[in-house]
Image (cartoon, rainbow, N blue to C red; front, side):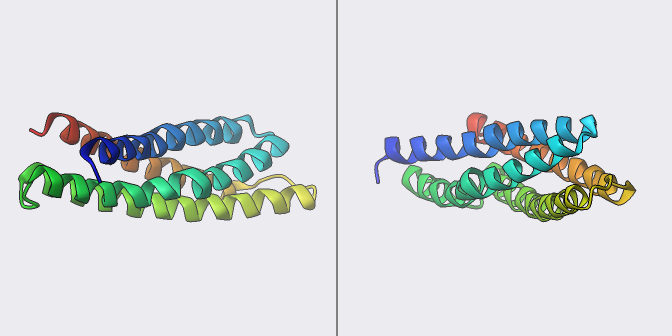
Amino acid sequence: MTYNTLITLHIISVIGLLGIGGGSAFYKFMADRSKKLEVIVHTNKMVVLADWLFTTPAVVAQPITGVMLANLMGYSFDTWWLLLSVNLYIFSIVLWLVAVWLQVLMKRMSMKAQKESTVLGADYYKLVNYWIGLGVFSALGMGVIFYLMVFKI
């Protein structure tokens, strides 16, 4: 594969991770703040769907295209910024996987509350707070990776 093809795929997957992931997180955050069950249910469904359709392929494409680019460009994998990036990626993806699991739980909880005509309780909002924390640290990790990839310092 050519450099231009690889870098294009790599950048598109970054957009999927940071752009779509960030947008989904914003909408979920705002929906949960509204405390409107109908809005929360719909948003939870869409966020989970967006993660499966867009973010998951990006999560898979990033390391594949990254390794291919590093090999093509002759970078050693013991270069400190590349090694740090790989470790931050693993850290961020582990946090993201836990956040996705929480999203699925929150989707089920909200759908159950809607079906039973009840309100979401403290247990739901406790998961929301965990989800926010995971998202913040995962996004920070991705931000540092982005910086390292661009500036290669």
